[in-house]
Each structure stands twice: as structure tokens, then as C-alpha cells.
Length: 98
Image (tube, rainbow, N blue to C red; front, side):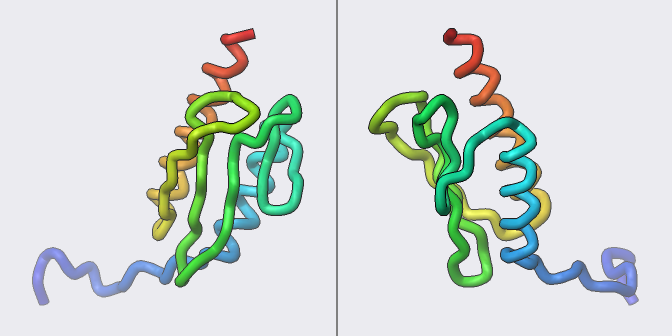
């Protein structure tokens, strides 16, 4: 047995459960849910969907009527934390613009 193998495997990523967790977190951040998208002050800022066992997320670059989107694929709990950190960072920036 090698030192790298701790005798257990990482649990499989559950995209559906991650989607539920992220949706709850976005509502706690006071974003309004409309279908598969979330809005801030009437402007779409996050889109979420599951695809091929992963979570596809689109995040607006700027708070605009027709934003440009950054796309990311969440395939692990670490990716999920990175996505939420990025959403929080952008929300702070958009709130500072006011």
C-alpha cells in the first residue's frame, strides 16, 4: 500500500445536491430566483444548470441588461467553493458601484 492511498476513495460529486446548496446560498445572498437564473436589481447575474454529472454555471462579468457571461463547470466540492467565492466577490464589486 502506498503512502498516497489513505485507504478510501473520495465520494462522487453529486451535481443535483450541489445545485440545491448553491441555490440556497444565492437566495441567502438576497438574489432573486427566476427559473434557472438569479437576478440582482432586476438584472440576471447567475445561470445554473446540470449537465453530464457536473454543474454548469454562468456568471455575469458586469451588472448589465445584456451581460457578457463567464462560464465555469463545477465537478467537485472545491470547484463549488471557488464558484461561491467568485460570486460573493463580484456581488461586493457590484454593490460598491452604487
